[in-house]
Amino acid sequence: MIKTLIYIAAFLGLFTIEVSFIYSLPAPLDRLPIMIVGVVFLYLYAGFSDVIWWMVFHGILLDTFSLSFVPLHWLAYIVAAIVTILASRHIFSNRSFYGVAATTSIAIATLLAVEILLSTLGLMFGSSAQFFGTIVSVRLWGIGLSIIFLLMLFPFSPKIKTTLQWLFQQYS
Image (cartoon, rainbow, N blue to C red; front, side, top):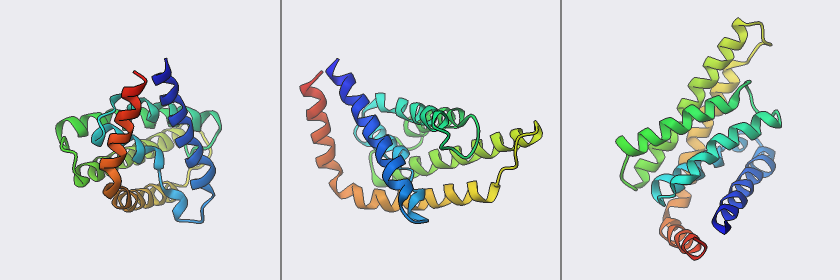
């Protein structure tokens, strides 16, 4: 029970940091998808398999609060979560910086592809016009900023991993 509450509090904390702090930064720094970076880092490097659900809930909350570019954003995050699982299990299974950075980049690129597909379908069925250039720009900046953020995070990753493992072992 306590472990579940810690997961929920950590998810809500990361969501709040992204929506309240990251989104208020000047462009292009507001393009950092810290939830995706955090999920991939915790899933691939630290071995917390339950955090993959955070991506799905993140998409649901973005749709709920109308903070997304496209309708049905939760669908894009579900596909990105599935691709993250497949990429981390079959392609980038080691816990190196390159594996985490590549998996993060693939997850964001998948998100971009699904967002473009959803926007195109929306246009076909009479939805308001989408700005494809904006969607592409935001996601490409997101890939670059994610890699830079991971470069800054990775020297501290062994300490982060042991602290999180200790925390979750304490309360499981």
